[in-house]
Amino acid sequence: MGKKFLNFIALSIVVFLTACTPKSSTSSDSGDTSSTSDTTSSSDTSSTSTSVDNDNPWADLADDYYLDVLATSGNDLLGELHDLVCETHTHYTTYGETRNLFQKTDYNPSFPNQHIIEFYTQASIPGKWDSGETYDREHVWPKSLSNGLWTNVGNNDANGGGDIHHIRPTFPTINGTHRGNKEYGDLNGSGSKSTYKYDGVTYEGGFYTADIFEPKDAVKGDAARIVLYMFIHYNNPSSLGKNNLTTASKIGTYDKSGILGSLPITNVIDGTKSEAFELLLEWNEMDPPDTYKINRNNAAYEIQGNRNPFIDYPDFADLIW
Ligand SMILES: [Ca+2]
View 1 (cartoon, rainbow, N blue to C red):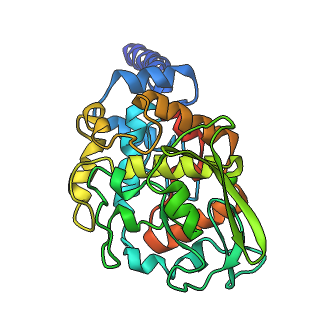
View 2 (cartoon, rainbow, N blue to C red; view 1 turned 180 degrees about the vertical axis):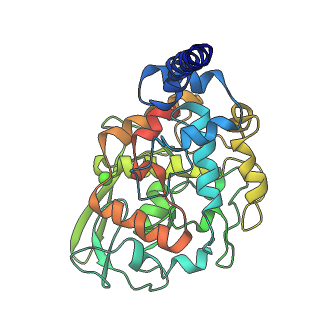
């Protein structure tokens, strides 16, 4: 009798315990309900990374490239994307090297290995480098506005000024005279038309004044996404190149809001920083990446090891800014 009673007590304890435990464990195991966010936000210790890891918000993007990015907005997302594009940037192309890369990155799908797409007019032109006669190499973020980060770009230099995500093939006059080192901005119908005659055809590349260059609508988003990539990659006042990763990566873990200002958006209108971002976000939205730009991102990834996140997922820009 006594033994049966003890067994009953033991069984009751087991039933009681099993009934209790799910209460605390379901909230962390069941995952998808609102209770998860409470759990993750309440504990900032390293133990959370394992559970969040299984729930990676960007797992479907570009295969596994964004698997380590766990943040979903603001400076945290900016910092993690910065770390990612720096740390995976395993090959820094020299400016000289870019002369022979456009045939891989900017090729016209209708004439692969022969023609490339000129950046501002989107004209299809022969891709073989002819010492800058047909096309030259445009710094979308001008050298003189780089805060010294890629002011000196010789053919042997490997810095932001030779990054293949940044450099674009452009007609010489459009690059040298119309764009020059002018800031990007909206001219709202004013300014001179940027045109270039090639092989009997006149191509249009946007508008310009003495101070501002406005790419044509079909190129606005592409230009904006390059600027945003450069901003998150090179946002650090150190010298850049193969040895800068340790310093540059600090933005992911240190005073992100402070560091943000160290590379101002100097190449976009004379407004405040928020006005510049407003314009870039608008351009990013009005002109989404097309197939050719997606191919380009993949080709640049094969060459450098890193990707332009804003081509893979333009909404990153809205989530950050
Ligand atoms: Ca476009």
